[in-house]
Image (cartoon, rainbow, N blue to C red):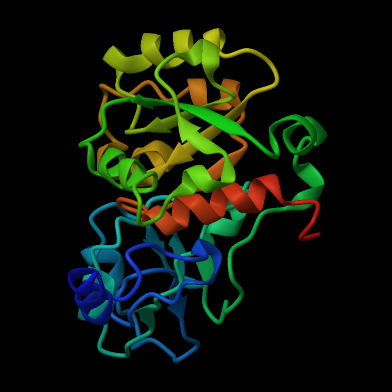
Length: 255
């Protein structure tokens, strides 16, 4: 008993009581904010520093679907225009909402009007997911595995990963979708019974990330699958994934 009390005093709760109300440390790199401070004339430092070409000028815009959160743009800007906040809730179902522009201070959210009714009605209380790594570095997989551990415990909401697509309600894709993984993505999607959802996790799945110019990618299938949920990050924090899925399933409640 004393060992248990000692551990509680030192570490507090060994689980997160409510993953939707967590405040992460200030040094966590989450949703970027771009101030309206003027840039120096013809300055292109942040554009040139970005390894995934996620930044463009006039107006200054950062594409969160391509951002790998390397902080190069934040560190190189003499005007401190781009700052990464500790906001981890960044899931959405609209690509346009991942375009962060100057002066944009709203949080990223799900658009309830385009969430299919069967997602709420049939999958709202229990969601089983099948993960396919389509050329990923396994960073996203590590964080998705963490989402199910005793600390984050997304299983308390009925959200779990399963081994067989036949037992799944949705497909989670990580990685830029290399040609050699295309068949796995397609076969897994076709094996999941209707209704089903598609979730893209991480910069690679959303845009190709660092590999977007590679001739080895076959990303045309994204247009066929019509993703229901987009989760940015490199890799996304477990809380980013959990909150994104919960926001999708509770879209009508939060409307």
